[in-house]
Length: 448
Image (spheres, rainbow, N blue to C red):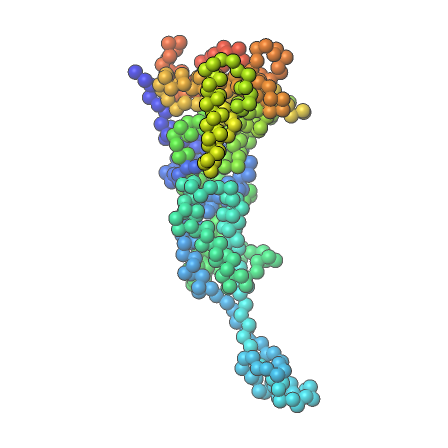
Protein backbone atom coordinates (compact mmCIF):
# COMPACT_ATOMS: atom_id res chain seq x y z
CA UNK A 1 0.00 0.00 0.00
CA UNK A 2 1.46 3.35 -1.01
CA UNK A 3 2.03 6.07 1.56
CA UNK A 4 -0.03 9.23 1.55
CA UNK A 5 1.42 12.01 -0.61
CA UNK A 6 2.19 15.33 1.02
CA UNK A 7 -0.60 17.77 0.15
CA UNK A 8 -0.40 21.24 -1.35
CA UNK A 9 -1.64 22.72 1.92
CA UNK A 10 1.05 20.91 3.91
CA UNK A 11 3.79 22.07 1.58
CA UNK A 12 2.57 25.67 1.67
CA UNK A 13 2.41 25.58 5.44
CA UNK A 14 6.01 24.37 5.63
CA UNK A 15 7.68 26.59 3.03
CA UNK A 16 5.20 29.42 2.38
CA UNK A 17 7.25 31.97 4.29
CA UNK A 18 10.08 31.47 1.77
CA UNK A 19 7.93 30.81 -1.29
CA UNK A 20 6.82 34.45 -1.29
CA UNK A 21 9.72 35.08 -3.72
CA UNK A 22 7.94 33.00 -6.40
CA UNK A 23 6.93 35.15 -9.40
CA UNK A 24 6.59 32.54 -12.13
CA UNK A 25 3.46 30.88 -13.49
CA UNK A 26 0.91 30.58 -10.73
CA UNK A 27 -2.43 31.69 -9.36
CA UNK A 28 -3.29 34.20 -6.67
CA UNK A 29 -4.07 32.38 -3.45
CA UNK A 30 -5.99 34.59 -1.03
CA UNK A 31 -6.37 32.00 1.74
CA UNK A 32 -4.49 33.10 4.85
CA UNK A 33 -1.79 30.66 5.91
CA UNK A 34 1.28 32.85 6.46
CA UNK A 35 2.00 33.55 10.09
CA UNK A 36 5.53 34.79 9.41
CA UNK A 37 7.72 35.73 6.47
CA UNK A 38 11.37 35.18 5.74
CA UNK A 39 13.16 38.53 5.65
CA UNK A 40 16.35 37.10 4.09
CA UNK A 41 15.28 38.26 0.64
CA UNK A 42 17.34 40.18 -1.87
CA UNK A 43 15.34 42.98 -3.54
CA UNK A 44 12.55 42.86 -0.96
CA UNK A 45 11.45 46.34 -2.05
CA UNK A 46 10.84 45.12 -5.61
CA UNK A 47 8.92 42.07 -4.36
CA UNK A 48 6.57 44.24 -2.30
CA UNK A 49 6.13 46.71 -5.16
CA UNK A 50 4.88 43.86 -7.33
CA UNK A 51 2.55 42.61 -4.61
CA UNK A 52 1.29 46.17 -4.13
CA UNK A 53 -0.20 46.28 -7.64
CA UNK A 54 -1.83 42.88 -6.98
CA UNK A 55 -3.97 44.41 -4.24
CA UNK A 56 -7.63 44.43 -5.20
CA UNK A 57 -7.87 48.13 -4.26
CA UNK A 58 -5.15 49.05 -6.77
CA UNK A 59 -6.71 47.07 -9.60
CA UNK A 60 -10.17 48.57 -8.93
CA UNK A 61 -8.66 52.06 -8.85
CA UNK A 62 -7.14 51.65 -12.33
CA UNK A 63 -10.33 50.03 -13.68
CA UNK A 64 -12.34 53.13 -12.70
CA UNK A 65 -9.67 55.65 -13.69
CA UNK A 66 -10.81 56.32 -17.32
CA UNK A 67 -14.21 57.59 -16.14
CA UNK A 68 -13.05 59.35 -13.02
CA UNK A 69 -10.17 61.31 -14.54
CA UNK A 70 -12.62 63.33 -16.61
CA UNK A 71 -13.42 65.25 -13.42
CA UNK A 72 -9.86 66.30 -12.77
CA UNK A 73 -9.61 69.43 -10.64
CA UNK A 74 -7.77 72.68 -11.42
CA UNK A 75 -7.32 76.05 -9.74
CA UNK A 76 -7.99 79.20 -11.74
CA UNK A 77 -6.20 82.50 -11.55
CA UNK A 78 -7.20 85.72 -13.36
CA UNK A 79 -4.35 87.77 -14.78
CA UNK A 80 -4.13 90.91 -16.93
CA UNK A 81 -2.01 90.90 -20.07
CA UNK A 82 -1.04 93.81 -22.30
CA UNK A 83 -1.65 92.98 -25.96
CA UNK A 84 -1.01 94.90 -29.15
CA UNK A 85 -3.06 94.38 -32.28
CA UNK A 86 -5.15 91.55 -30.82
CA UNK A 87 -7.71 90.77 -28.15
CA UNK A 88 -7.60 87.62 -26.06
CA UNK A 89 -10.11 87.37 -23.28
CA UNK A 90 -12.29 90.10 -21.80
CA UNK A 91 -11.02 93.68 -22.30
CA UNK A 92 -10.42 95.53 -19.03
CA UNK A 93 -11.21 99.04 -20.29
CA UNK A 94 -10.18 100.82 -17.11
CA UNK A 95 -6.75 99.19 -17.17
CA UNK A 96 -6.50 99.62 -20.94
CA UNK A 97 -7.02 103.42 -20.69
CA UNK A 98 -4.58 103.63 -17.77
CA UNK A 99 -1.97 101.64 -19.71
CA UNK A 100 -2.34 103.84 -22.80
CA UNK A 101 -1.95 106.98 -20.70
CA UNK A 102 1.06 105.70 -18.77
CA UNK A 103 2.88 104.69 -21.92
CA UNK A 104 1.96 107.84 -23.83
CA UNK A 105 0.79 105.56 -26.53
CA UNK A 106 -2.59 106.41 -28.02
CA UNK A 107 -2.71 103.54 -30.50
CA UNK A 108 -6.22 102.15 -30.31
CA UNK A 109 -4.95 98.66 -31.02
CA UNK A 110 -3.36 98.36 -27.53
CA UNK A 111 -5.49 96.55 -24.94
CA UNK A 112 -5.28 95.08 -21.45
CA UNK A 113 -7.21 91.79 -21.41
CA UNK A 114 -8.32 89.62 -18.51
CA UNK A 115 -7.23 86.02 -18.97
CA UNK A 116 -7.86 82.92 -16.88
CA UNK A 117 -4.88 80.74 -16.10
CA UNK A 118 -5.56 77.11 -15.13
CA UNK A 119 -3.12 75.57 -12.66
CA UNK A 120 -3.02 71.75 -12.73
CA UNK A 121 -0.27 71.43 -10.13
CA UNK A 122 -2.55 71.49 -7.12
CA UNK A 123 -1.84 69.05 -4.28
CA UNK A 124 -4.66 66.66 -5.21
CA UNK A 125 -3.33 66.27 -8.73
CA UNK A 126 0.25 65.92 -7.53
CA UNK A 127 -0.80 63.05 -5.25
CA UNK A 128 -2.73 61.42 -8.09
CA UNK A 129 0.13 61.76 -10.59
CA UNK A 130 2.65 60.38 -8.08
CA UNK A 131 0.52 57.28 -7.46
CA UNK A 132 0.03 56.66 -11.18
CA UNK A 133 3.76 57.16 -11.73
CA UNK A 134 4.52 54.45 -9.14
CA UNK A 135 2.01 51.96 -10.54
CA UNK A 136 3.17 52.60 -14.11
CA UNK A 137 6.83 52.03 -13.20
CA UNK A 138 5.99 48.76 -11.42
CA UNK A 139 4.09 47.43 -14.44
CA UNK A 140 6.53 48.52 -17.12
CA UNK A 141 9.85 48.30 -15.22
CA UNK A 142 9.57 45.74 -12.42
CA UNK A 143 7.39 43.42 -14.50
CA UNK A 144 8.87 44.05 -17.93
CA UNK A 145 10.13 40.44 -18.14
CA UNK A 146 6.83 38.85 -17.11
CA UNK A 147 4.92 37.00 -19.85
CA UNK A 148 1.28 37.72 -20.51
CA UNK A 149 0.12 34.17 -19.79
CA UNK A 150 0.98 34.22 -16.09
CA UNK A 151 -2.34 33.68 -14.31
CA UNK A 152 -1.54 36.02 -11.43
CA UNK A 153 -1.00 38.84 -13.93
CA UNK A 154 -4.19 38.24 -15.90
CA UNK A 155 -5.89 41.39 -14.54
CA UNK A 156 -3.05 43.56 -15.79
CA UNK A 157 -1.91 41.83 -18.97
CA UNK A 158 -4.82 39.57 -19.88
CA UNK A 159 -8.36 40.33 -21.00
CA UNK A 160 -9.27 43.90 -20.16
CA UNK A 161 -5.56 44.80 -20.08
CA UNK A 162 -5.32 47.32 -17.28
CA UNK A 163 -1.68 47.93 -18.19
CA UNK A 164 -2.65 49.23 -21.64
CA UNK A 165 -5.42 51.39 -20.18
CA UNK A 166 -3.03 52.90 -17.63
CA UNK A 167 -0.36 53.54 -20.27
CA UNK A 168 -2.83 55.31 -22.55
CA UNK A 169 -4.00 57.61 -19.77
CA UNK A 170 -0.55 58.22 -18.35
CA UNK A 171 0.96 59.41 -21.62
CA UNK A 172 -2.01 60.70 -23.63
CA UNK A 173 -4.35 62.36 -21.18
CA UNK A 174 -3.91 66.08 -21.90
CA UNK A 175 -4.73 67.10 -18.33
CA UNK A 176 -2.47 64.55 -16.67
CA UNK A 177 0.40 65.64 -18.92
CA UNK A 178 0.15 69.15 -17.48
CA UNK A 179 0.83 67.90 -13.95
CA UNK A 180 4.55 68.09 -13.23
CA UNK A 181 5.91 66.05 -10.28
CA UNK A 182 9.59 66.13 -11.26
CA UNK A 183 10.66 68.67 -8.63
CA UNK A 184 7.92 67.93 -6.10
CA UNK A 185 8.16 66.04 -2.82
CA UNK A 186 4.79 64.66 -1.78
CA UNK A 187 4.51 65.40 1.92
CA UNK A 188 2.41 63.62 4.53
CA UNK A 189 0.37 66.78 4.89
CA UNK A 190 -0.47 66.80 1.18
CA UNK A 191 -1.62 63.18 1.41
CA UNK A 192 -3.76 63.82 4.49
CA UNK A 193 -5.37 66.89 2.94
CA UNK A 194 -6.09 64.97 -0.27
CA UNK A 195 -7.76 62.17 1.71
CA UNK A 196 -10.36 64.76 2.81
CA UNK A 197 -11.28 65.65 -0.77
CA UNK A 198 -14.93 65.22 -1.76
CA UNK A 199 -13.77 63.69 -5.04
CA UNK A 200 -13.49 59.89 -4.63
CA UNK A 201 -10.68 59.79 -7.21
CA UNK A 202 -8.43 61.86 -4.97
CA UNK A 203 -9.52 60.15 -1.76
CA UNK A 204 -8.56 56.70 -3.00
CA UNK A 205 -5.36 57.95 -4.64
CA UNK A 206 -4.23 59.44 -1.34
CA UNK A 207 -5.10 56.27 0.59
CA UNK A 208 -3.16 54.06 -1.81
CA UNK A 209 -0.16 56.40 -1.89
CA UNK A 210 -0.16 56.53 1.91
CA UNK A 211 -0.16 52.72 2.06
CA UNK A 212 2.71 52.55 -0.43
CA UNK A 213 4.73 55.22 1.32
CA UNK A 214 4.48 53.60 4.74
CA UNK A 215 4.79 49.88 3.92
CA UNK A 216 6.41 49.32 0.52
CA UNK A 217 9.90 50.47 1.44
CA UNK A 218 12.71 49.21 3.63
CA UNK A 219 11.74 51.23 6.68
CA UNK A 220 8.12 50.22 6.27
CA UNK A 221 8.43 46.44 5.86
CA UNK A 222 11.06 46.14 8.56
CA UNK A 223 8.88 47.94 11.10
CA UNK A 224 5.43 46.71 10.06
CA UNK A 225 5.78 42.97 9.59
CA UNK A 226 2.13 42.26 10.45
CA UNK A 227 0.87 44.52 7.66
CA UNK A 228 3.29 42.95 5.17
CA UNK A 229 2.18 39.44 6.16
CA UNK A 230 -1.40 40.56 5.55
CA UNK A 231 -0.48 41.92 2.10
CA UNK A 232 1.33 38.72 1.09
CA UNK A 233 -1.49 36.52 2.38
CA UNK A 234 -3.93 38.32 0.09
CA UNK A 235 -1.63 38.32 -2.94
CA UNK A 236 0.31 35.06 -2.50
CA UNK A 237 1.32 33.44 -5.81
CA UNK A 238 0.92 29.66 -5.68
CA UNK A 239 2.70 27.62 -8.39
CA UNK A 240 0.26 26.47 -11.06
CA UNK A 241 1.44 22.85 -10.96
CA UNK A 242 1.72 20.70 -7.84
CA UNK A 243 4.85 19.09 -9.28
CA UNK A 244 6.55 22.50 -9.46
CA UNK A 245 5.52 23.24 -5.89
CA UNK A 246 7.04 19.91 -4.82
CA UNK A 247 10.30 20.76 -6.60
CA UNK A 248 10.44 24.07 -4.77
CA UNK A 249 9.54 22.29 -1.53
CA UNK A 250 12.67 20.14 -1.82
CA UNK A 251 14.85 23.06 -2.94
CA UNK A 252 13.81 25.12 0.07
CA UNK A 253 14.31 22.15 2.41
CA UNK A 254 17.86 21.82 1.07
CA UNK A 255 18.47 25.53 1.70
CA UNK A 256 17.05 25.38 5.23
CA UNK A 257 19.14 22.35 6.16
CA UNK A 258 22.44 23.75 4.94
CA UNK A 259 22.55 27.40 5.96
CA UNK A 260 21.05 29.99 8.26
CA UNK A 261 22.69 32.86 6.40
CA UNK A 262 21.17 32.28 2.94
CA UNK A 263 19.80 35.09 0.80
CA UNK A 264 16.62 34.28 -1.14
CA UNK A 265 16.32 35.60 -4.70
CA UNK A 266 13.22 36.66 -6.62
CA UNK A 267 12.15 33.84 -8.92
CA UNK A 268 10.87 35.38 -12.13
CA UNK A 269 11.34 34.49 -15.78
CA UNK A 270 14.76 36.13 -15.91
CA UNK A 271 16.08 34.53 -12.73
CA UNK A 272 16.26 30.84 -11.81
CA UNK A 273 18.47 31.15 -8.75
CA UNK A 274 16.50 30.52 -5.56
CA UNK A 275 19.11 31.32 -2.94
CA UNK A 276 22.81 31.66 -2.24
CA UNK A 277 25.09 31.74 0.78
CA UNK A 278 28.78 31.68 1.69
CA UNK A 279 30.55 29.22 3.95
CA UNK A 280 34.30 29.47 4.59
CA UNK A 281 35.82 30.08 1.15
CA UNK A 282 32.90 28.72 -0.87
CA UNK A 283 29.77 30.18 -2.41
CA UNK A 284 26.67 27.99 -2.68
CA UNK A 285 24.17 28.85 -5.42
CA UNK A 286 20.85 26.97 -5.64
CA UNK A 287 18.91 26.96 -8.94
CA UNK A 288 15.49 25.60 -9.85
CA UNK A 289 14.53 24.26 -13.31
CA UNK A 290 17.82 25.52 -14.68
CA UNK A 291 21.29 24.63 -15.99
CA UNK A 292 22.73 26.94 -13.36
CA UNK A 293 25.17 29.77 -13.98
CA UNK A 294 26.35 28.48 -17.36
CA UNK A 295 29.49 26.73 -16.11
CA UNK A 296 27.92 23.35 -16.95
CA UNK A 297 25.66 22.20 -19.75
CA UNK A 298 23.63 19.13 -20.50
CA UNK A 299 23.68 19.07 -24.31
CA UNK A 300 24.84 16.45 -26.81
CA UNK A 301 25.21 17.73 -30.38
CA UNK A 302 24.78 15.49 -33.43
CA UNK A 303 28.34 16.25 -34.56
CA UNK A 304 29.72 14.69 -31.36
CA UNK A 305 28.26 11.31 -32.39
CA UNK A 306 29.77 10.97 -35.87
CA UNK A 307 32.30 8.29 -34.87
CA UNK A 308 29.89 5.89 -33.18
CA UNK A 309 30.18 2.37 -34.59
CA UNK A 310 27.13 0.76 -33.01
CA UNK A 311 24.65 0.14 -35.85
CA UNK A 312 21.59 1.03 -33.76
CA UNK A 313 22.96 4.43 -32.71
CA UNK A 314 24.34 5.12 -36.18
CA UNK A 315 20.81 4.73 -37.53
CA UNK A 316 19.30 6.84 -34.73
CA UNK A 317 21.72 9.66 -35.55
CA UNK A 318 21.12 9.32 -39.28
CA UNK A 319 17.38 9.46 -38.62
CA UNK A 320 17.75 12.70 -36.63
CA UNK A 321 19.97 14.31 -39.26
CA UNK A 322 17.53 13.39 -42.02
CA UNK A 323 14.64 14.81 -39.99
CA UNK A 324 16.59 18.03 -39.51
CA UNK A 325 17.16 18.36 -43.27
CA UNK A 326 13.50 17.76 -44.11
CA UNK A 327 12.37 20.18 -41.37
CA UNK A 328 13.66 23.08 -43.51
CA UNK A 329 10.16 23.25 -45.00
CA UNK A 330 8.80 24.36 -41.61
CA UNK A 331 9.16 27.79 -40.02
CA UNK A 332 11.18 26.34 -37.14
CA UNK A 333 13.92 23.97 -38.23
CA UNK A 334 14.94 21.08 -35.95
CA UNK A 335 18.15 22.06 -34.14
CA UNK A 336 21.40 20.08 -34.01
CA UNK A 337 20.94 18.82 -30.46
CA UNK A 338 20.56 15.07 -30.10
CA UNK A 339 19.91 15.32 -26.36
CA UNK A 340 19.57 18.17 -23.89
CA UNK A 341 18.46 18.38 -20.32
CA UNK A 342 17.61 20.83 -17.55
CA UNK A 343 17.67 19.45 -14.01
CA UNK A 344 14.98 20.26 -11.47
CA UNK A 345 17.58 21.46 -8.96
CA UNK A 346 21.21 22.45 -9.50
CA UNK A 347 23.53 23.47 -6.66
CA UNK A 348 26.89 24.93 -7.59
CA UNK A 349 29.64 25.16 -4.98
CA UNK A 350 32.08 27.79 -6.22
CA UNK A 351 35.40 28.80 -4.70
CA UNK A 352 35.19 32.47 -3.73
CA UNK A 353 38.78 33.38 -4.63
CA UNK A 354 39.09 32.04 -8.17
CA UNK A 355 35.37 31.54 -8.96
CA UNK A 356 36.04 27.93 -10.01
CA UNK A 357 33.36 25.26 -9.70
CA UNK A 358 34.38 22.76 -7.00
CA UNK A 359 31.22 20.73 -6.52
CA UNK A 360 28.02 20.09 -8.43
CA UNK A 361 24.85 18.71 -6.83
CA UNK A 362 22.04 17.69 -9.18
CA UNK A 363 18.52 17.08 -7.94
CA UNK A 364 15.80 15.17 -9.79
CA UNK A 365 12.38 15.54 -8.16
CA UNK A 366 9.33 13.30 -8.57
CA UNK A 367 6.07 14.17 -6.85
CA UNK A 368 5.13 10.57 -6.34
CA UNK A 369 4.76 7.66 -3.94
CA UNK A 370 5.16 5.22 -6.83
CA UNK A 371 8.35 3.19 -7.06
CA UNK A 372 8.01 2.99 -10.85
CA UNK A 373 7.95 6.79 -11.23
CA UNK A 374 10.87 7.09 -8.84
CA UNK A 375 12.79 4.55 -10.94
CA UNK A 376 12.23 6.73 -14.02
CA UNK A 377 13.61 9.64 -12.05
CA UNK A 378 16.67 7.58 -11.12
CA UNK A 379 17.43 7.00 -14.81
CA UNK A 380 17.04 10.71 -15.56
CA UNK A 381 19.27 11.65 -12.61
CA UNK A 382 22.04 9.32 -13.72
CA UNK A 383 21.85 10.78 -17.23
CA UNK A 384 22.41 14.23 -15.69
CA UNK A 385 25.37 12.93 -13.66
CA UNK A 386 27.07 11.09 -16.52
CA UNK A 387 26.36 13.70 -19.23
CA UNK A 388 27.21 16.92 -17.34
CA UNK A 389 29.96 18.80 -19.19
CA UNK A 390 32.11 21.78 -18.25
CA UNK A 391 31.47 24.60 -20.68
CA UNK A 392 35.03 25.95 -20.66
CA UNK A 393 36.67 22.74 -21.98
CA UNK A 394 33.61 20.71 -23.09
CA UNK A 395 34.73 17.73 -20.97
CA UNK A 396 32.47 15.45 -18.99
CA UNK A 397 32.64 15.97 -15.23
CA UNK A 398 31.92 12.39 -14.22
CA UNK A 399 34.76 10.27 -15.58
CA UNK A 400 36.33 7.43 -13.57
CA UNK A 401 39.32 7.36 -15.94
CA UNK A 402 40.13 10.98 -15.24
CA UNK A 403 41.13 10.80 -11.60
CA UNK A 404 42.53 14.32 -11.54
CA UNK A 405 39.09 15.80 -12.17
CA UNK A 406 38.77 18.21 -9.24
CA UNK A 407 34.99 18.73 -9.47
CA UNK A 408 32.98 16.56 -7.11
CA UNK A 409 29.53 15.55 -8.35
CA UNK A 410 26.56 14.33 -6.32
CA UNK A 411 23.02 13.37 -7.25
CA UNK A 412 19.80 13.69 -5.26
CA UNK A 413 16.73 11.66 -6.22
CA UNK A 414 13.95 13.39 -4.34
CA UNK A 415 10.45 11.96 -4.05
CA UNK A 416 7.56 11.58 -1.62
CA UNK A 417 7.11 8.83 0.96
CA UNK A 418 7.83 5.43 -0.58
CA UNK A 419 8.00 2.08 1.21
CA UNK A 420 11.25 0.47 0.05
CA UNK A 421 12.69 -2.88 1.02
CA UNK A 422 15.59 -1.15 2.78
CA UNK A 423 13.31 0.80 5.12
CA UNK A 424 9.85 2.32 5.54
CA UNK A 425 8.75 5.74 4.33
CA UNK A 426 11.94 7.08 2.75
CA UNK A 427 11.86 10.49 1.07
CA UNK A 428 14.88 10.38 -1.23
CA UNK A 429 18.23 8.94 -2.25
CA UNK A 430 21.63 10.62 -2.33
CA UNK A 431 24.17 9.36 -4.85
CA UNK A 432 27.88 10.11 -4.42
CA UNK A 433 30.43 10.31 -7.21
CA UNK A 434 31.00 6.55 -7.01
CA UNK A 435 27.23 5.97 -7.18
CA UNK A 436 27.00 4.86 -3.59
CA UNK A 437 23.52 5.69 -2.40
CA UNK A 438 22.16 6.72 0.98
CA UNK A 439 18.55 7.09 2.05
CA UNK A 440 17.69 10.64 3.05
CA UNK A 441 14.65 12.58 4.23
CA UNK A 442 13.69 16.22 3.83
CA UNK A 443 15.28 17.13 7.18
CA UNK A 444 18.55 15.26 6.61
CA UNK A 445 19.89 16.80 3.40
CA UNK A 446 23.49 17.91 3.74
CA UNK A 447 25.44 18.97 0.69
CA UNK A 448 28.88 19.49 2.23
